[in-house]
Length: 202
Image (cartoon, rainbow, N blue to C red):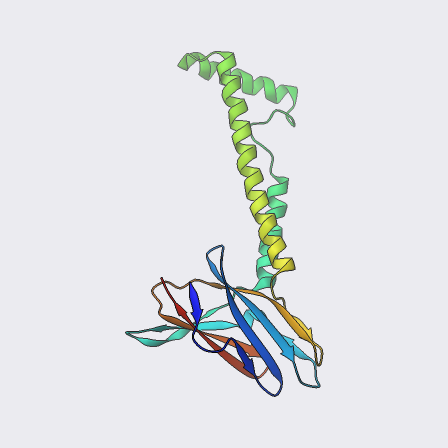
């Protein structure tokens, strides 16, 4: 869990930035980030440039930064995975197999069954169980991918050009760091940098 040490909102002449910890999502920190453009010009926000550094009581501020998960890259990965899953065929199903393939597999499984003392009903029952188990696991994987894809497309903060006097908000994910006392999140908006401190309780 993370708790704010300082104010969750930073004000400047050009922007108003708010960062709020929302919990964990798929083993990542989840933050709600709101950015208001107070200037007369449009500003570009790229969440993949957001990052944080770790603070340890023994070492001090870490020199390495941990970047936010790039939403565009993650969406592309998930779409490829979703397409791959949708095109997978159940290897235990007889639906898409020809009569020749079914006969050949039956001959092979029958020979194996004869060696191990199994009858045809037992073999078919095992095949049906394997088919059902594969289908259940496959549907679960597809559901998980679709659910995460929905999150990134509908809830995540994506690269965005904010018009003058407008505001944008969305969620940003960072990989979790263990054994860390505090983290300092750096929100970069063009040439401006805003920092937010959070204390971690393991």
